[in-house]
Length: 316
Image 1 (cartoon, rainbow, N blue to C red):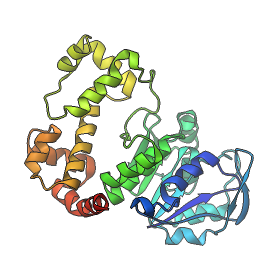
Image 2 (cartoon, rainbow, N blue to C red):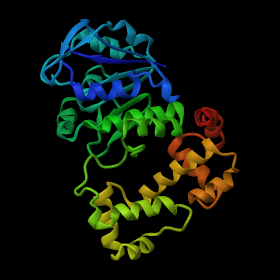
Image 3 (cartoon, rainbow, N blue to C red):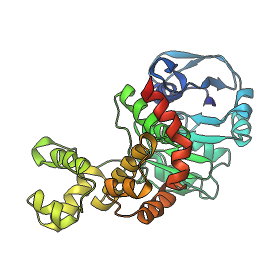
């Protein structure tokens, strides 16, 4: 897959680094996919970063038209006009497009977000909405996919968005393996809140509870059952769970069950009904419904697409 990162007169080092970590490193030694990656701009040469050093941009914008994935890291010069050549190149992008943090402003300026849902760092969400009223800005999510365009919130949410694309192109097992290599969470669903009121402290018991839930996904797990286990009322438990994880218990469990089902589909030959039972969906029809709604394909199609890649890596 051909991937480019488009930068302007300055670039945010951390957000560019995220894109480079996911798509720009040769991890073939770990049996992970490699990409034809390039950083490009309107004026190749040394580009200053927001961290006090410069990066060398060796490619022009001609690489954008060839790319399967065009990425835009955080755009640090929100009050300065964007080079028309950059906007023209973005507007002509033929593949998927990803922005990290304030990179959404460059996509919006190029017209790529008109009529679409999008997100950015919560600090800039109101400005993005005021400046580009044709965009529907969702300030409360980690990342949003609308057609070929994926926009993410600030900083670490860019990792989640990049891994989401890896999951789409290469399957859950590859995304999980890459996440382990990067020492980051394998999956955070895009609709999760950008920030939560509380971390996950051990003293609350939630860390142990979440571990227990992941090991018992095949069981009926209702809020009253979980609340009793946490020694809380159902109402208090539901509130504290969302404060801690950024998602409701139902949504969190659905995400975990889908991930487990993906793993089983990629790494085993179990029938779909058996996969559904082990993942906690109860029946194959229920699994098919949620898979189609959240992944856009059937379990059978997902297995055909990604099982060979996952098993080939496990055999190495």
